[in-house]
Length: 339
Image 1 (tube, one colour):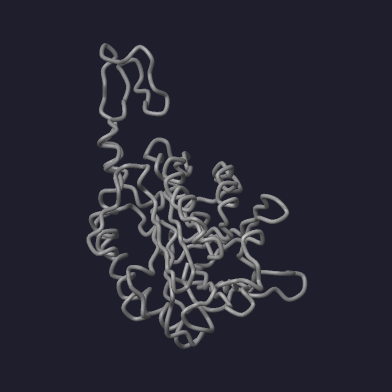
Image 2 (tube, rainbow, N blue to C red):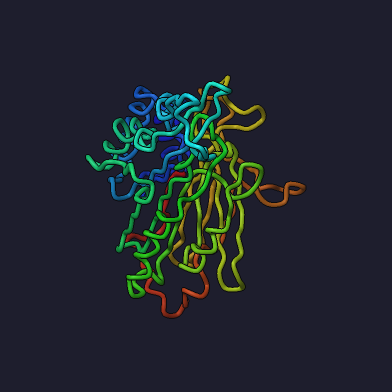
């Protein structure tokens, strides 16, 4: 049903018959079960086949609902008081009263994403396994013909069934990715660079945003995330020449009983204009799970005539000279991606 509704909106309402990229910023499932991941893969696979995509044009990062709580609990075996270390590691320990404590087994802890890997990731990426080592949990997707680079990061690497609020970017993983840019001798300087993760960097559930400075100085101009259940836009200024636009995606699909009251289901369609180098974000809404998608007029001046879209320049000024730009997309016109 979800695939048919989305395809109808893209083809019939928006007259879009081909997508250049598909971006999913986490929470493919509700409880990280095999059945849910298989259903998510079938949806993604059908979109890939029906809109001219391939694995090299799909970027997916896990959300907090994509790690399995049961596997997380198994990673914390009970240790009786007599066998506890003198100093308990606060980030790897769950108190269990006078009897002892639950101490994290790091090897089992890394298996929290096993179902995400086995029943989704390796099917989307044709046998490629999702890394168990946190420092390797980033996705580097570059398309030289479009001069676009995506960097996918795992903001859930330290979240589990007990420590549910530990959203963060793993700095060794980010460092490994940025080392590629440093070693590229300027190859990506005039490319559009987009970072993707799950959690927001502002608000009550926002992560520590300091890592955004690293993205800014490396020429990233756009960040995409999910988690907040409602479409949003943000801006992070590093200096007068460098800043990041932040685009948050709403909830694409949820049962009626789990839908946030007053907030419709949503998705974003991002389009880059090759001539003006402006990025346009069209937000679509669906009031009922079994209903149809429509324009979501929520941007701009709500006191006058709010719009269902907004646009901005996603390129870092200090890295881009309009006269000398080599940015030449492989095909003209709309360059759509569902996020």
